[in-house]
Length: 147
Image 1 (tube, rainbow, N blue to C red):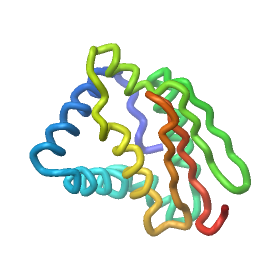
Image 2 (cartoon, helix red, strand yellow; image 1 turned 30 degrees about the vertical axis):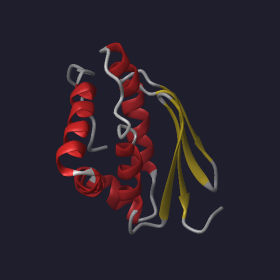
Image 3 (cartoon, rainbow, N blue to C red; image 1 turned 180 degrees about the vertical axis):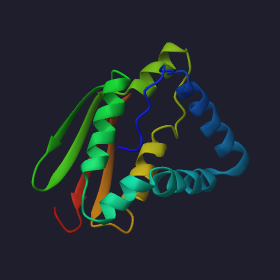
């Protein structure tokens, strides 16, 4: 997997991300966030996007497993013939924001939604992200046309 950091882990970057999301939305509008997060999904995570274009979700699954484990998130990945489901019971990013005394931006989870949508754009997959509580979500990747 291309995206595997192994150095010291600095979770406070989630605070900087939260502040940046608020700044961009306030100064440039939500459309700017959409452009940024779409670019992240297709350019920063290019190899994951390319694998998804080939119908292969293995690198996305590995990415989720690696980073949620590394940041000690509480999660489960379920694979069925119809879908890949990432069930997050405790998001490490939201947990860190709260630990820092920060209020998560109302747009904080938008990054997950939009990056997942961008990853799946022009691929045989589609993404659905449901926010189920503070720091909780269900991210579902399905083959297009599968209900």
